[in-house]
Image (cartoon, each protein chain N blue to C red):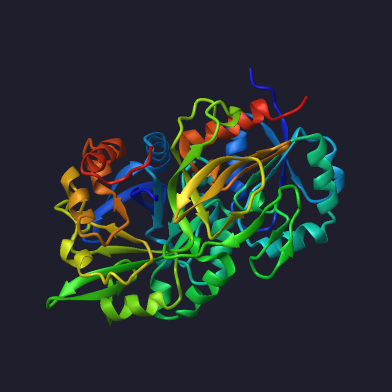
Length: 207
Length: 250
């Protein structure tokens, strides 16, 4: 039986929050939209969805005094970053202007270079490093997920669990201690995306 | 590598789905929510929702977008009646992932420029509806009712200046006829266009999808009638594409 979790959701004021809420509700969990740090206390886990730019998202977190509390939260419980949400885990990003991120992953966020059209939009496959990864339980290797982004994690020192090819191979799945990130949008990736979210709530939540 | 997408276009009119031929004589074909659920389950790759009455009624039904997005776990685009940046903001807040800009661009191209800057090109699609007159493709607006007098070749060049995320290019002559995509239209597209092109209008059998892909100019396939009026499913289309060497979602 599914245990009803209280999932914290960070809202940056634009974009796809509703899609993530729909997915959480379909999986039978409750959610709390995080506006300030005191709301972090009663959560089972935190999800940082992502549409927007690195620079404006960090400014937004800073304005709401959420940066330190989120870092603190990651020492105790799991955080899932989706797309931009995963990029914010990096030390530094170069979207807009050079901006410091949450520093939970040793990496930087840079724009795709090369000949292929940017943004990278559409269904692309994820090659797993570890076929036993719990986040992908029930999902075959090389399954397709929905991507929409122009920036990616470069020089990721550890935690890369899946890569995707678009001109170059870039990290599309990261698991490092309590920090989980996916560059694609599981909430928009059909059945497999929902399964991935369901695995996150099943395996990456500490009671 | 990106996969070839199969997109279902849905025309909504009040609480029904409609479909016509050559942008005319729309008739009710289904109810919306059951159809959305079916195609979400059948794993079509993306949905594009057009509200055919939004422009005439001068209103966008955000509540409807919100209630429909609940049933969809795949990318959802909305088009119809968009005139302002504020509209786009509200559509995205209502659960859509992208918007389709079309008629409004003929009076104000600025909205394309501004929206790409504000929301990112990944969520801005441009819809272009064309009709062949004297062997030349003309752009039509207002759901195909108004000849803008602008030639397609000129218009696409202007649009591309502002870097939309993708272009959904519909042949009005082929729409709803189910006799294949307008191969001439797509094969003539310049190979310098690097924005993804979605072919739309005319799919009626499995072969139609592979034929238009062989022009090497389109990245995604939109269809409506084939889903409403035949037994063909997204999976059957994917199998067909895969057999012919095109990469599809798995």
